[in-house]
Image (cartoon, rainbow, N blue to C red):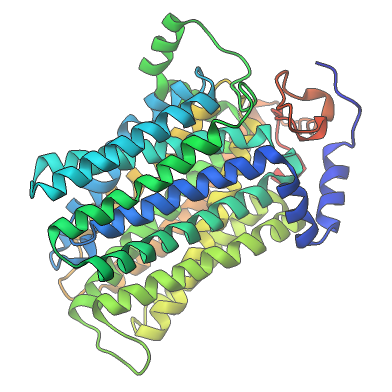
Length: 481
């Protein structure tokens, strides 16, 4: 499909950055496709918030209630690992099936699983049956979110991807928090018994209903994938999903480096998570408005959430100044400094300040990573790469918590672990730079040209102008340098 000539990537990005944030937000929301994807994301994460808060009494969703570091790690592994291990294989389906249909079907399946889990709770069943229902529901929800990320370049112009990711992820986190608040409110009204928890859990199915209704209004084929293969090829793609995603990430300039930074952050964040949990439970006491215990963990979560919100504003601005790679460098160094300066004192005020910085850092790195995948990975494998990203995001976190569990004292006071976490950030910086240099060496030391408007996908969304079609960069764009 021919596309009307447009500005080159540098000119387009410069023009975008010269606009104010309100105008950029208005431009995003004017695209019907983006608004619908955002609605699906909000409904999915609102439902997640309701679902997990309704079952919040379980160790499955509240590992922070455990005093034993090993049990904390086990609880987190139960929540995060199952879908993460099958994600790359499921991601292959996102590259073979109409993503709009995937959202409709997965939303319906999620609703059924939510109601079945509520039925298990109502029947008073515990153990494997409850865990299986809960984990299956979470897994389908994560599958939907991976599909949304893979579809985003079909409704957002390339120069708007970082801003779009910032809006989507931040508003999604807010929706999850609102969902949790709704669940707590419903439990307060109907009661704290197990039967009451079942009715509260069933409320999460409302989010699934919204997903199905909104996704059904999206034009068929408008979210990709642009090219599909026959059923036999799809089965092979599922079987080789992990390898396919890894190869695509390896071959995309900037993506491999970004994954290294994401892995470093999640490793360090996992170590600090365990330290903070143990400090709050076993060592620290209230100091004025700063609380210890479960209340203190709530304040830490709020500080991290505040960092996420600031990242949504700071990241697009910073990438406009120093590029994606430069933003990742700044954030990795900032995290290491924050851990040494704010983490080592191990007081409530400094822990909250450090949590804010790590929330900012983690979100900024993830936004840059998502934008790299969306700009540099072909639409035919993008779902697998996003699923691989999700796996990296979760597995490294659980591995870090598990490793720290065997090194942390029960009190949580371990300067060694915090120094180790800071060193991991700096190691991540080294890996990031080596990956970028390796990519340049593979390309003969030349800087590939930035993508132009003529490299647009052959299957743009009918609801999006030609300047907003998905693109694959043959090399790093101007914001990678």
